[in-house]
Amino acid sequence: MITAEKIIKCANLNSMQLEKLLRKNYPDDMVLASKFVGITNSGDFCYTIQFKDDDSKTGLGLSKIFVNLNDTSDELVADY
Image 1 (cartoon, rainbow, N blue to C red):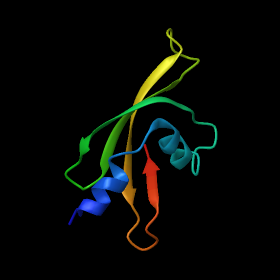
Image 2 (cartoon, helix red, strand yellow):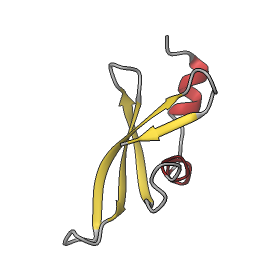
Image 3 (tube, rainbow, N blue to C red):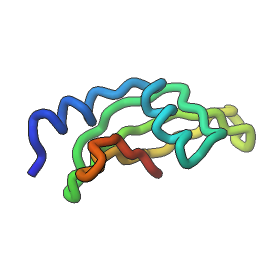
Image 4 (cartoon, helix red, strand yellow):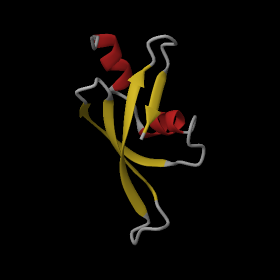
């Protein structure tokens, strides 16, 4: 079940908080902008992010990341 507490923790993250979560597994990733999109059918909280991408013509890339709350440790986890 998705509780109100989980929604508050997972749906209100800013770009800096998302970057900090991602850097646990991807130490070089940098989030320039982010927007909460919604909750997936599996209960993950989805964000679109903009990041620096030297390989693109604009120098920017777009991706989605998924955030969830680890039930055992009560820590937020983010991944692509």
